[in-house]
Length: 139
Image (cartoon, rainbow, N blue to C red):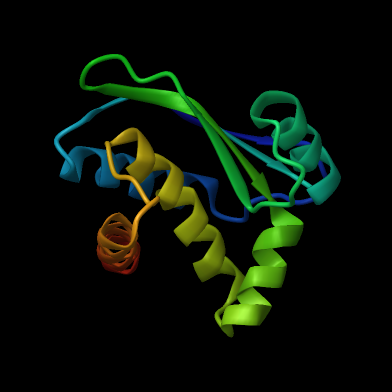
């Protein structure tokens, strides 16, 4: 089950379509959907989590806590809407596209993809693009 939670004024316009797309992404990776919670927040909220749980004194767009057990993926994915907006501007892409990229990025981590080295980062970006294309097909 995919749930959307809000710790700020932002609200996802098309929750059902996004949830269906994320479910399709999970299935396309041969995984089973567990409980995945998206928590949309601001920079301050996510910065506190980054400090408290990861000891990182930096701003970030997404932090995910992975509770996956075996083939069933579960977790909490915190997203700073402010960071996503800034990144969308910096990368010259629409906000909704950047938001979906960040959302699928967390799920892909739960599926076992990493992004800490150049090779892993290239694979992650390729997988993000592949899964973003699924969203457009689904609509």
